[in-house]
Image 1 (cartoon, one colour):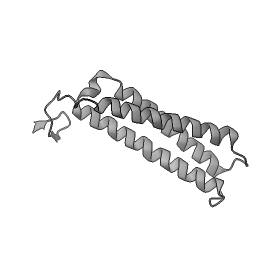
Image 2 (spheres, helix red, strand yellow):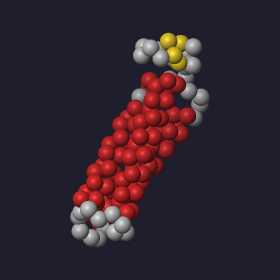
Image 3 (cartoon, helix red, strand yellow):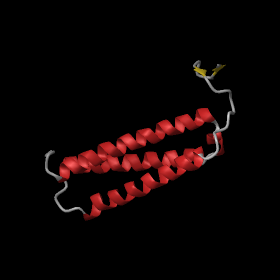
Image 4 (cartoon, helix red, strand yellow):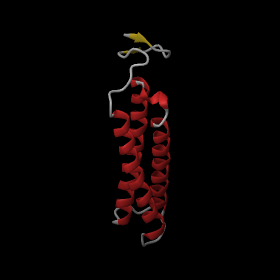
Amino acid sequence: MVESGSGRKSDEAPGVPLPAGYRQGIISAITVLLGFSLLFLRYWSFEAEGEWTLASILADLLLAVAILLEFFTLWRSLQPEDDDVSRYRITLRWFFTAIATLLLGLLLAGLTASRVVKF
């Protein structure tokens, strides 16, 4: 085990590269999700019928935050340093945070559109 700068022990030695294909896979996954997020935000913000409510605005903000997190994750995954296993795992955590935020926004948007949530 190797001691990291934060005092935690890591199973990987510094500079261990990722296996072939891992970076390409995460970059593809991020861009697919980013494309969906942008299209859904366009629909939700400009094309969906109905009045704007506090819930629909909150859903819109959650979708926007998710998109910003996806852009940040894409930027991290395109850095040469992301070929290191420990840095790649941090990028994956950011990606999962973006996914969770997107799912919350989609859930709130769906509940708002079906008029289950009214505030």
